[in-house]
Length: 211
Image 1: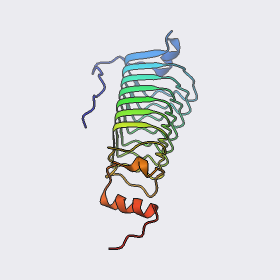
Image 2 (image 1 turned 180 degrees about the vertical axis):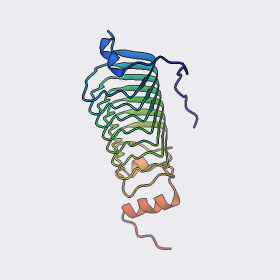
Image 3 (image 1 turned 135 degrees about the horizontal axis):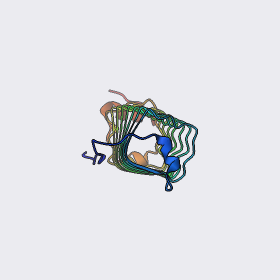
Image 4 (image 1 turned 30 degrees about the horizontal axis):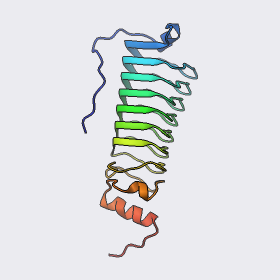
């Protein structure tokens, strides 16, 4: 699946993330941010646009209603951050830690999570379209009542993930690993799985498989 990458200039001025407090509309755009510490803060309805953000920490920060468009995050930590009701489009998260991050009631379009940690993250009641999770840890992630369209889980660990009330029709999880999942049988219809996973699902259903 081809997705649109962030549209970001190669020549961006350096800024500090705390500069957002000095902007009337709480926005940062067309800049590069490196090594910022922005923990335990609160910024409602912030906007990030055409940026590169590296080696920065946003743990336990409240970003509710944030709008993120055309942004590349590299080696950033969003553990336990609140990004509910956010709009995230043409964004990449590479080598990022998002342990327990809250993305409930959010909208994602053309987003990539690469070599990242999203265990215990919450996506409940969100809409994800053209989203790729690549070699990403999603243990215990919550996708309750989500709408998934053109979403790929490539070589991920999705053990214990919750897909309750979420249709997996057309979703390919065949290269990913898990021991258990929470998902209704009806929502598995059309999901693309490996032969080994098919046996796992059969076992979870209580079937006894004989060769």
